Length: 229
Image (cartoon, rainbow, N blue to C red; front, side, top):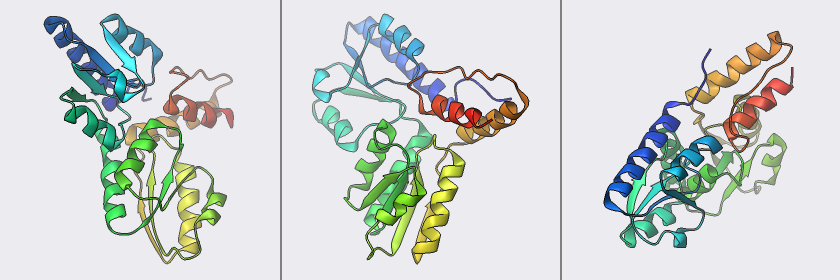
């Protein structure tokens, strides 16, 4: 079975530790804009090395800022660079993919259906690259009915940690209603594989323990899948 941190999280943690070491050597402040990964143990380790986790751009007053693995809104990254803050981009490369697709869909006049959690930082980042107001963020296939009647072109993008079944149900709804539907399955492989294996294990086991951060979308999706069985 597959388990443990995916490559994007491993990469982000490595970049975080490297930034912390450079900050110590030069006596410069090092910030993480939001939790670099959704794992409290990792955050505590980085904070012990002097990395300050902040939630507001104004709290970064200089030095170095690490952009979390989930990505940040486009305007926040631009603000840091404009102010001369050194940026370490720990955004997972697989999160950059839906950002780029959203930007392309926006420039081509599509209505965006983003399958995910509206409050998740990854989703907020992707929406900033879309850059328009004609979008719907949802987990629920029935909410597709909220899309205005005059829409004909719909582009579907997924939060990287969403359940495959949820994405498929929303795609099916859209394909029945709209004349043009562009589907981009941006769920990362590590997520898909862990979800499939969690389902197999849950069907066999009397008890299943999911180890992860309670604030992690990945962890919570695995729990949700296991609870079915």
